Amino acid sequence: MKYTIVLFLTIATLMGIFSFLRCKKSFSPHTETLSYPPFRIEKNTITDRRWKPNEGHVSKHRQTKYKVFYHDERITFPEELDANTGVPGIWKVYFLEDAPTPTLLVGSKQVYLVNEKDEAVNLIPIPANYSNYASVQWLDTQDSQPGPKTEILVGEDTTNCILTDGQHLLINETSVLRIKDLKLFHFTPNRDHTDDYSTYQVLGFSPDKREIAFMGSKSHEIHRTEFVQGIVVYNIEGKRAYTLPVDKTNTRLHDPYSAGAEWFNTYLEWKQDTNGRFIVNLKTLPELPAWTGHFTKSANYQLSPVREEMHAVFLAFVKTHLSLSEDEIQTDEYNGLIDFRITFSGFVLNIGYQKDFRSVSFSVS
Figure: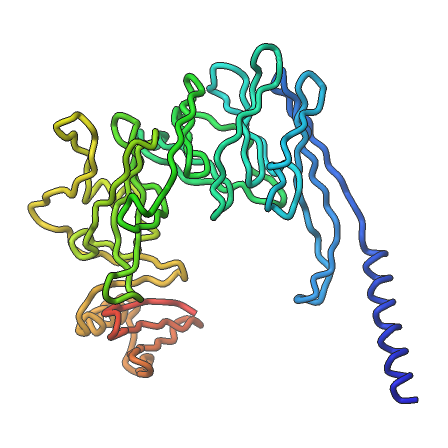
């Protein structure tokens, strides 16, 4: 009898949940038409309500998908468009505003260049980057150097559909599209050609527009849990690749994965070799810049590498700036961390020193 009651209650509960979800599920489509003759694009954003079991409530979910038409006839894309995505359909459409002929960039994880050839639609597949989402990035929009990278993600698309102002577009970190004549260049990132370095963010583009410099990283040959950094360079036509190792101290490299154009231009430069090719070289500086503090991904301010006495110096600066008394400062020490805790205007300020990392950090909670 006991088990019968439990089973009955379980079934009733499940039926209630299913009934709840069925009543709550609603679709609110929004369609926008974008014209780019001879192409027409339908942008469909569907809003529904979904049960989130980990959060215990129903929430709104929005997803955008596109349909592309050529002279009012819907374009059918190859099956590869939906390969390994989990969410079929077109996630994003870009208009290449400065192209010589009307041209689109269309895709999900697989991307296609779409234009007109011989009075018919022309689909050109771009090699996919199977380890990451598809992405686009101008290589020459910020003082002829790379701009920010944009990934093509599933979900609601609220981003701009127009790509403009640049002449060299990096697609999927495997191909470069030259806008003025729509010529595609392909290269294959391969650690066998770069001394086993993996590539991360783009840092620079050579003056002749043929070489791309990436931040690179690999495990230390002896201390395998540590990493060493280098500048990995690929020729956009796939003709060559090489790595220039860099020393973190001599280049004041706090966080390799947040380094950008400013860091690159401070410590590195493009020089032509005897064959006229542009090669990345370390600059010879009369004096290295001082280490500076920086904000981490967790929004802490950090100074490193520093000696332990910098901890007290930083505390003295904060103490003077905020006119603090000794009673407002507490000291804790645990797991290699020495922490000054300060209560100020309802906030708790932490000034910590980590011996193992030789770093002073400042955070607010």
